Amino acid sequence: MAFINWSPALETKFMEIDLQHKKLVDLVNKLYDAMAASKGNEVMGPLLNELLKYTVVHFQSEERLMQSNAYPDMTKHKQLHEELKNKVLTFKQRFDSGQARITIEVMNFLKDWLAKHIQGDDVKLGGYLNSKKSAVAK
Ligand code: FEO
Image 1 (cartoon, rainbow, N blue to C red):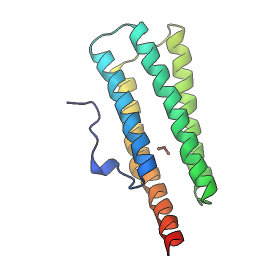
Image 2: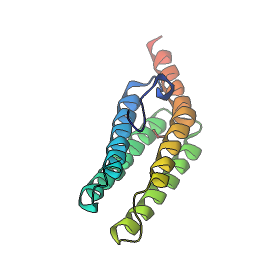
Image 3: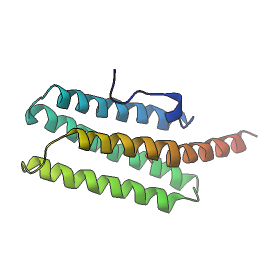
């Protein structure tokens, strides 16, 4: 069983965002599997790096959609992205210098943050983007 199982509760119903979220969930699951198999930092390091890089790509993509569709909650949503990005960046620096390890607590933090953010903030954004799309189609 995967660490995070994709479920309809995680769908924003906006395809571009959902596809990116599926990839993020996949990367978190890979990192978890490596941790559970007690892989060394030579395996965990690149996985953590890939997760961080893809998280940045994903946040930028959502932020472009918010900007081009004049999303009213953009400032708050971007701030949440910044907070997570900074936390993960700080963690990665500590990991790279040997001061931190990937533990179940770290994985649970990522899982809980993703679930809360996707089900709350991103679902709201997806609904807004879909309403803009149907407004254009009319
Ligand atoms: Fe999918 Fe707002 O992050």
